[in-house]
Image (cartoon, rainbow, N blue to C red; front, side, top):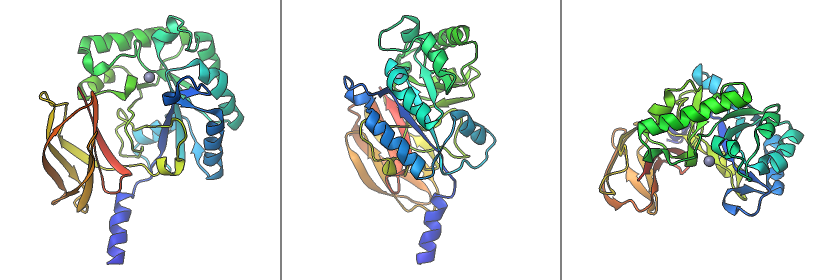
Length: 313
Ligand SMILES: [Zn+2]
C-alpha cells in the first residue's frame, strides 16, 4: 500500500518543472502591493544561490519547452513587468551583483510618453546589456474587454515602436494584469512571439503550452520554499471556459489523471472545498455567484500541484 501510494504521488510529480517569477517594483515603498524591498530581494537572491537554483534567461526555458525536453527542476527565471524606473535604479544593480539574467517586459506607452515612474528608452537600452527585453502591450489595457481589432492594434503599435526604438524584435509577450482568455490569446498569437506568459500559479515543464506559460508573482515578503512548491497539474478544462453571462458558476468539469481520487476545488471568495474524482473526471454542479471582476477557479490535490482557470467579467 505504501509503495502504491508512493507510485501515485511520484506520477503527479514525474516531470521536472522550472519556475518563472514576476517582480514589479523594487525599493519603492510608495506602492506596497507591487513592491519588493531591496533587503527582501537580496534575501531571495541569496536563497536561490544557496539552494542551488540556476537562474536562466526566459529564452532557455522557452527553448526546452519548444523542443519538448525536460526542463530542469532547479531552473528559475525572473520576469520584471511594467519597466518601472525603480527596477533600473534599485533592482538592476542587485541583478548585476548576482549576475542573474532577467526579462524586462515593456509597457510601451508609458516609456513613449515619458511617464515619470517608468524607464526611458535609453535606460531600457542600457538594461538590455544585462537581460532580455520583451513586450507588455502598448496601453496596458484590460484586453478581455477589447475587440479583436483593438487587441491587435494595441499589440501592433507596441511591437512596431519597440522594434524602431530598440532595433530588435520582442521574443515574448505578457498580458497586462495577467488578464486573458482564449480569444485574447488567439489574437496575440498572430504575432511572431516565441512565447506568451500569464500570471497563473504553477510551473513550466516540457508539456507546457509555450503560449500559456505560468508565472508566479513575488511581492512583499515571500516564503520562497512555498512558492517553489507550485507545480503544474495536467488537466483539461471542459467547463467553465469563459465568465458566465449571468455571473453564476454552475458547473466545473475537468479531466485529470484517473489516479487522482480526491481533489480540492478553489473558487475566488469561496476558498477551497474537497471534491471526489470519478474515473479521472471532476464534475461538480454549483450555484456560486462570481463576485469579482477577475475570478480564479483552480483544482489541486495538495494546494500546490495546480491547474487554474481565470474568469474575467
Ligand atoms: Zn503590468
